[in-house]
Length: 134
Image 1 (tube, rainbow, N blue to C red):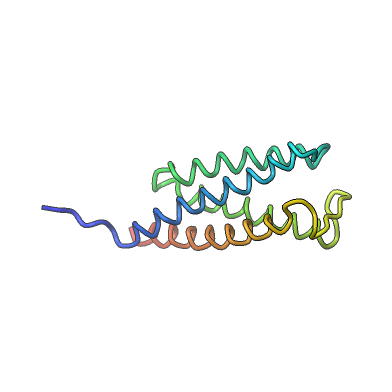
Image 2 (image 1 turned 180 degrees about the horizontal axis):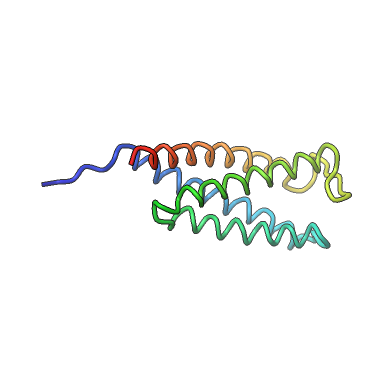
């Protein structure tokens, strides 16, 4: 007797993989900026962001279903928080630094983090809906 996959398992798997890819892209951008000369407090925060993105990407792909809600919510908060920090740096400044829209990878980062936040929001909703239905 063949077992049928649960409804939404393909969507959930796709969401997990896409979420991990966006977390890795976010981390890679920040690590690249460190290698391009971002130093001081911002450099340290960028390195921590890169490490966090890697850890959360691994968690999104490998976490068992019972830990997936935690991994998903933490990933969403991390990516949305990083996007918020960039928006603040572009508007009112952050840690005494005011970023310009024409700065290195600023537009790319805005696009990656915006889409990544949306993907993680949908994935988190799927995870929580699947958990409630289980």
